[in-house]
Picture 1 (cartoon, rainbow, N blue to C red):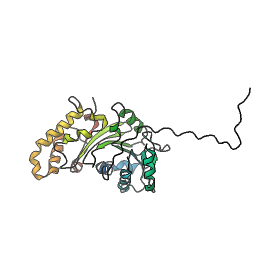
Picture 2: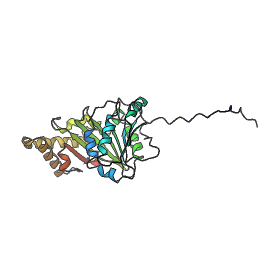
Picture 3: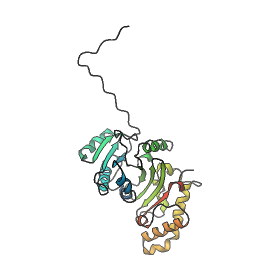
Length: 277
């Protein structure tokens, strides 16, 4: 049986193309300190995950047109564990190239998407803010599953959304087994009612803020407790927020935090209380 022509001397077979990143390029809008509320949560009640991690690897997924949030995350997490490694991942190669001059020990940047190109390593934390909100409601679930499947044991995936300067934020926290909580974090004086944050809900919930859905009932309960706590306003917004959260807990809402977090304008509830019907 004949054979085809042999390659010429010195011929080198072409390298296989790397797989196409999973996802699409986001708008990329970002600002300094925009994600400080979520970072404060990661370095507070969630810091134990990083301290216990065998590999202290953290991903800032879809960091945007400028790498400022990845640099801030690296700086803040170094206070928790000085050998932490933060990798900023972006689909847009131009954004990765622009970030590369900021590379230093413990901080790097790679092109990729939800598949997390980390050479087989499993991150302790993945933070994706203002990323999934740009996808369809029928798409976020597959991306959640993709990222969760790549977490280290005991790892955390934070899918969040916030306004342009980080005054109104929410985030869903997911473990390898699934979603576990929803956090609302608001700057005092930047809202009239807690439900003003509704337009910043994660993609899994933003279209569910309608009558009959659990998240709608939760936001209404927040508003009701906030209004009923009006007498505490004479002592300041913080005292009113504390009274609101205490009333929610007394009413049976499964809050996962306490006054030390409430004082920051933050409250976290178990996912089952707000999950889509």
